[in-house]
Image (tube, rainbow, N blue to C red; front, top):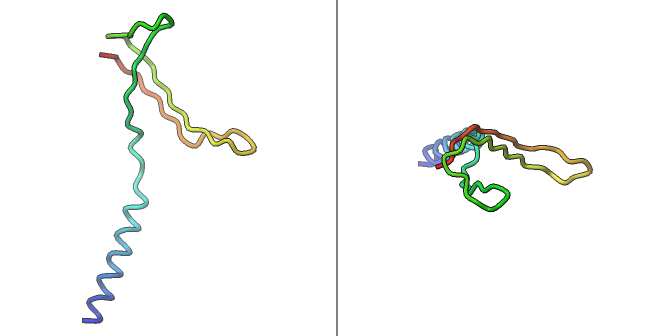
Length: 72
């Protein structure tokens, strides 16, 4: 019984370590696209860029992604 518990704890530790190393599939977000007058941009081709910065001694981009989309 003691050996079984040790084996299970080792397997759980190894599995959780593998899951923690998974690669990000990007951020999920929704937004409204508007022009300078505040009108919605419907059925327009847009380029969306998202960057996450750290405000340490120098600005550093930690994550960035861009997409070419069509609004609906």
